[in-house]
Image (cartoon, rainbow, N blue to C red; front, side, top):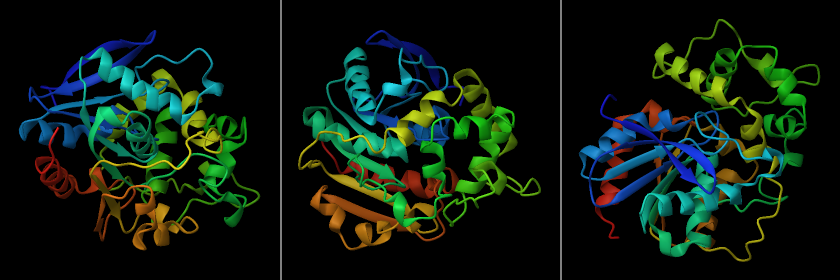
Length: 313
């Protein structure tokens, strides 16, 4: 970890916190989701650099040590799509391999649609191709206490999270999201009430890890994270008949709670997702949770490097 270099890169007037390791000619850019941050890729950064690549992870705007935009409540996933291209331009990189997890996977899938010349190939974890809009996730098919529905309501998550310190919020969400069941609150509960204080952290996520995450979210808060992905998820992207035409790999943990979203497992397993990502290979990790890359880093690293080594740029 001490070999990872940290800097701030100015991108369209915002300073983004960038973590980088490796000197290879080919660049791998990692995109995090929520409640993650650049640090979620700690194992993958080192492994990919050791395999001969230049590995870069960064805090998206509004997250961690990166600047907030002027009007976070107007942001959408497409702002982060443009941010990827602008960051690569600022770093003098014309084309890269993208790896995205959770909401970072939504962004990673859209970059080759909007900027096809920028992406050599694509790896996503936890979330398949999803075009933002009203039908992206069918909240109406889940109970009204579904966590995304709750967090899309302005002010509700802020009040819920505000009852706890930042470290407790991250702890609670990591534990809830590590389970195979979709987080759903009862009418008399908030999402944070689903947490049992006696539940330990997952064995693959240490108190030290939690402290790093918490220190970064203490800096940024949750304002932007609640907007992107959650509150902007229903905003139409404006992309008509989007296609990802680069080689792509989807890594899914079979214990990932996202598999329980209405239609999600069938969408992936039936191959319907290939209507949008024709050159997609999907690999399942039977015991894998939503955080499969932290839970089984050696296994995921091997899959990533094997896939990258087959690609050209």
